[in-house]
Image (cartoon, rainbow, N blue to C red; front, side):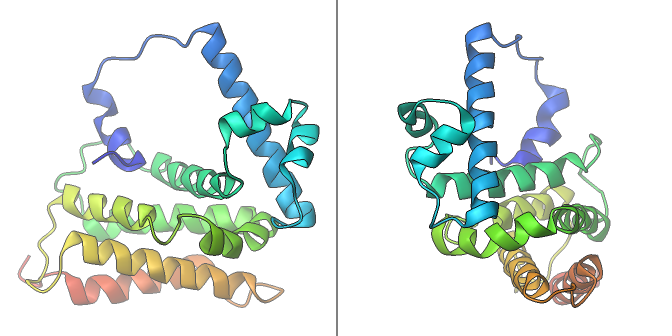
Length: 212
């Protein structure tokens, strides 16, 4: 398991990595600059209308540099989704997750995602649906996998008909459905955090073993 959540869980058990070299720092800075330029352009003029040449011009790097970091335009969307998951994972504290209440843990993670979407509503409206269509967001089940890892890490007892993978996928699909409905109407038609909390209650109500 290698998701952002588990990397965060295990961070206290591994040695602190050596500082990055100057070359690596510069490369990371260029990558971040290219990514930021791409997201800005996608929001301003749309994903399909944005070319790699425009991203290079906006970020102040050569076209080949853009392709070195992101060989395909859709990879910007995967990176966008990954960074949002990492942001939600950072909202969890560093305590051992074993024995933690599953509802509290998943609730905090989903609340963090809701807050991120609310604070970046324009960006979310511009990129969420295009990420679902063009990126690996759904097929890769990355969010579902991270949620499943959280379920497994807590040791919560599930009904025989449920498993962590199933719970994670149901929550991730429900999350994307809620966000897409939420961005389609101005102003926002419902409280996204409350909608995700209700989703969590519904899924866990069917998945958790009442005996545990």
